Length: 263
Image (cartoon, rainbow, N blue to C red; front, side, top):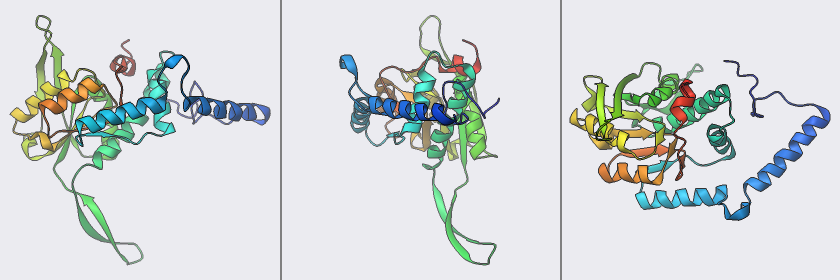
């Protein structure tokens, strides 16, 4: 996929020249001013939405962790939610957001101090991650996050679990599960990009605990969550850690279809 130029005025687009560049700067400044001002018609502004997400975070407790909001993350969220975004731009922005979540997820894993020798012969006091970590993706949309994890941890083992709704009962049902044989002794990065009701994740965590894994050793990596989804998961498993970029009443449930081109 070509990444030197994207549609919709992406940050990596080639710079405009002369008057066009000046017009773009003025437009960007105006857009930023509007973005952080109260919205017309009583609609909540992004600042207000972030305050609401922070309130949900306080209600749920330290188990829910939000990536610090900045303009870069906000733009990625906006492009992913925009129905007019091309699939190429969607995948590109989704991969960027996934990478940010994965990096912060790795930051939640245990580490130990170590000393290394630099090329100049000096000693450097640093850290290294402890061994025994693995990923588990909830198929199919969770598979979109696998490459982002492998880009950061080349040799990490990744398990899979397939959960679908039963046609008769509409309850989440496990159809397939394959994990490393020693998963009960590992720290697990559970990958599922969209938390809507939370039912799928609850069932996945239940299966993991049935394999001997403690919920406190599970870090759930997601991109978007609803307040209800996050609450449901933490109520069922109070020791789990949830890491996401946004808590919003409306989740972009089209994510999997758009990412894999099945919409």
